Amino acid sequence: MAETLNIQALDPYFKDEVAQEPGCEHLLRCFSCGVCTATCPVSEIEPSFSPSRIIRQVLYGLREPLLSSPTLWYCACCANCSFQCPQDVRFLDIIQGLRNLAIRTGMIDEERAAQLARGEQLIQELRRRFIARVISASPEDLDLRAILVQLASELDFATEKET
Ligand code: SF4
Ligand code: SF4
Image (cartoon, rainbow, N blue to C red; front, side):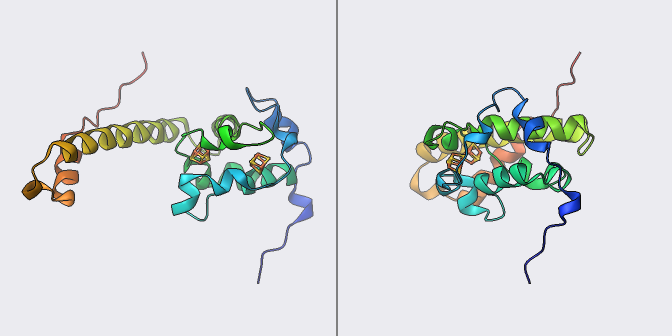
């Protein structure tokens, strides 16, 4: 059975709070067309992540469930949704605003958020090296698992601390 909304737990001011984050002022333009979700590469492989659903959750006032949700951190920041949106809602800015709010309100600690950001950088670096290695490998060396394992072992996992 589908979950019902607890009306008392909704925060009617949540959308205003999000709209005040940098770049999020177009939030209320969303008319739920779903183009962002349809063109999101993460939604394609992870059905629990949906930009249009996240915007509806903001508009409904689902503050705590959304700010504490791991799905906020699934976005790969490719900006495809922002380019495709007919209403110029700029979902990429909205997800950044929600992440900032999650940190500021203690829904996730700063260190964990920093590690997630660092992990994204490492994944992008791994992707870049993987493409370069596959393009240059001879046909007999095209063992994708072995290439990925080797490249991952070569990555520098050290996290630079802010001074
Ligand atoms: S594409 Fe834009 S208008 Fe359509 S659901 Fe996504 S954010 Fe809203
Ligand atoms: S920026 Fe995030 S939400 Fe938008 S299309 Fe890319 S991965 Fe999906």
